[in-house]
Image (cartoon, rainbow, N blue to C red; front, side, top):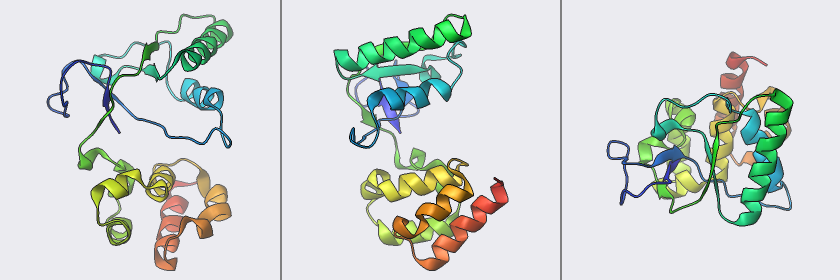
Length: 176
């Protein structure tokens, strides 16, 4: 979680200036392509609805012309499918500023029991924020992935048995 797209030096949540809240995705192109990531993005928001503020606007920030071309192609395909104008913007990526610690891994932070384990695993807040494990668990706790997927990969998450059981319990409460 962080901020980009504006001119304000060192933005923060209460001093955002003209930046947009965003996230930066680090990915392995041998496992998922940029085009596949864009497919997830286009299906995960309302691309025909304008945001009520720049802070929360939907935008794809591209790091090069190849990414921009793929983003435009996805936008155009979606517009043709929907028969509507897509208002999500496509812009060049600027400097990414990391958001404050309390904005990181929001869903995971709602479980004190799981956070105790993560503080033990990652005493440094930056290591916690950058952790793939924390990102995966945050996604599951946030309702993404589902129980079947969790059971497929829970052993590989590297959590202690009580924390694995707690995570599975939280997801069972959320439903299928």
